Length: 129
Length: 504
Image: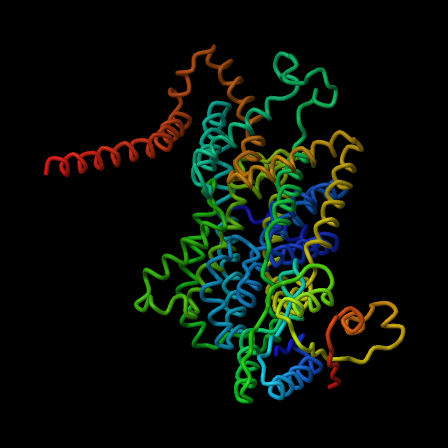
């Protein structure tokens, strides 16, 4: 039983991670942490630095959950990457964080969460901070 | 020394237009210093077309600003992200990033800024004194001396430059060949023009530089994949403490002097200077094991040296008309476009240009010192732009830019061809620098060689009868033969050893 969490270093990402650790503990499975920056730029705000990742792994270990970290860059849409990795590790559930989006903002920028919800072929747990 | 032209030079710099272009130059310079891949030579090449409408002094002030500004900018990414934006700040990564990991990124950046400022200033002061002297000396140079100097310049750039020496020489020969395209200046015969009117006046420098450095580098960098890193936290406490300053004062002084001398050397320049300064500090230090783990001197020395070298590499260009490295070759091209031919007569005939450019470096260095730290946040934001967005925009600017020079579509074709050539050269390990430099020096070499042969009635031994050209040619031979002899000696030694082994 594998739990996949799509993580970004924001309050939403932290909320998703906390829920994912709980979920992995309940299902007695391992946790796959996906933190993928978009390829091509030297700096990415979506990327968590080494110290932050180490702290996350320790937090999960304290709750008795093993964490597998994926930090490879992706091309194209991040939603596709999440769904792809979920298939690759055969996750039983995907955990994502939801952030507040105004209707206009959603119209302009789209919604990654919505795309994951629609595209994923397995349960998705959406968490609010 | 006559002070009046020096003061007039300050008058030139302080004109609002020139101040504005100095500011634009250093900001653009810092920006390309931050962006990995796009170097100062490429940027200056891409921006050559916009210098055409403006005054020569203003144009060179801006281009010079880009060059030394880039040395500043490269430091920022080296320290914060372990990404050297510039070849000349590669060594800064070792100690700069180590300091940043200890939470002392501010100290590293502060020391680098102070070191860069002092290195630059030392070099400008020395430049102000040395350049007129060299120029006065070189006023007696005739065609034979220029022949020898151009030969030596091309050879030194080919041998000192990074990478394979043979490949650099091949690139330089290719540049010399390209310089022969067009109508012969003495006889009027058409050479390699293939009856093409666009080639009749020879290949233009601008499309070649824009293609090889600009387009070639953009294409090459599209292939590189940078692993994205986390955006760094804001930098606090930039001013270095008194202890740090005391610890690095020696390194800054030595780095500045070393950088100044290495910058003058053809083929030297900022990259070599920063490497040499770092190595020297490490060797001198009583505690070399601290280097690489956050030694303040390890940041101070290379940063002072690269700025000092960037400044002093203007000496050969402004006094002899011989560009010392690839970036200087592009600035040489910019001067030619403006109708100014750099050489010993520049100080006397165009004192406003000479001293205006030299003195603008004081102002530019002060601007950099003030701006570099507050703009760190902005630069890090710019690094979040993906290459897939940045590259097409840069290519478009390059192609539109080259078209505006002569309003000739042929030039666009040239840029594309040389862009492809530059990409292939980089891919195969050839440095395009020697090619561009040899192309620039090619016409000078040909002109002065043929003029001196006319002078000597076609007798090549005439070169050896003049003291300066003779000395330079002997030096040329030494530089050519030294590696060959050394290789031969090494081979003999190794065969000797093998023989003794076989005997045993």
